[in-house]
Amino acid sequence: MIDYERRKKNNQRTENSFSSLLKTDAFIVSALIIFSSIVLFLVSLNFDKVPPILNRGIQPATFPKILLLLIIFLSGLNYALALRTPWKSQVSLPKPFYYTLLIMLVFGLISKNIDFFLGLAFLSAAIAMVWAERRILPIFFVSVIFPLLVFLLFEKMLNLRFPGGLLTNLYYY
Image 1 (cartoon, one colour):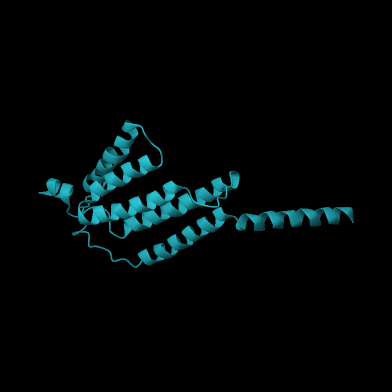
Image 2 (cartoon, one colour; image 1 turned 30 degrees about the vertical axis):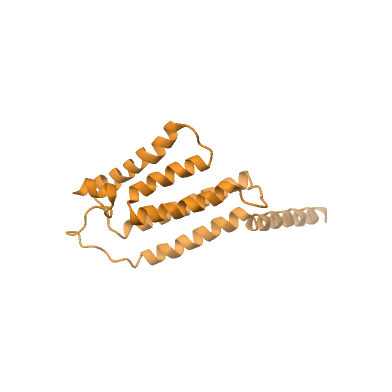
């Protein structure tokens, strides 16, 4: 009889701990991101394939799939890390969060109307400064070297051409 009661208690503890893991903010956020990524991945299976003669680098349908798989993996990793160190709950979001949203809006305007790489440089430098980075070398690396490396990766290694803009037109023409 005692053994039965002990197993019943252990079973209840296991059920309670499992259900509490599913109710955490980290699980909800990770599950929503993973679910959306899976839906988008399934949509990307219907992308048209480009004939090999016209292909300049990777297939257009391949990159979204790779990116979505990376997002799924990182979301799972985020949840696993949140199990070790739970998120602290906050009543209100910090001011840098709202500044970051504004910076992303300005980035969209700059990258659409002026140049993608100027927008990327602005985004990187402004977010670093808003989140209290004051050292010049890391800000320079993030805002100048990083966009340059992105350009070289996509342009030279993957043979993908960026849309025209102030800086990209200087390179292409």
